[in-house]
Image (cartoon, rainbow, N blue to C red; front, side, top):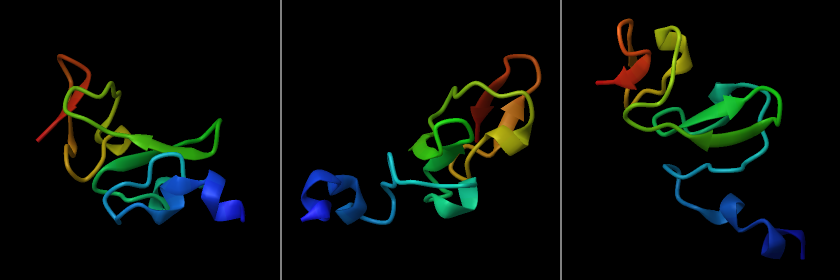
Length: 72
């Protein structure tokens, strides 16, 4: 069974870690971003590095221009 070795596909909607994606809209936007090179969802957290607010997730939507980190 393919799902048995991909347990992240059975996680609740707020946990899309390592789910396959082509853009962040394929991930749980509140908690995750799509890594455009690996094409998998990864966590977004307070202090996540950013250049613009587009790099941040819904939970921490603002990129601080001085600190280059996501915050709310």
